[in-house]
Image (cartoon, rainbow, N blue to C red):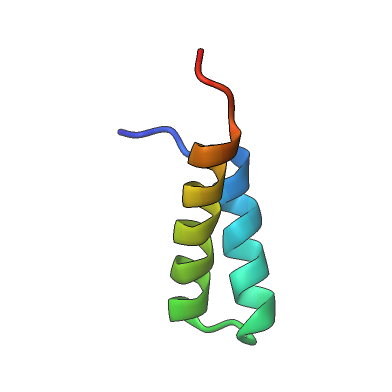
Length: 44
């Protein structure tokens, strides 16, 4: 299983709020949050 970062959760919540609870909005927000988190977080 792949661990999701905190930005994925924030993106999912944001997508849910912006689309009024739409499942597509939730998944889309999570994907965008994951992409942003991948680009922003420093490499270890």
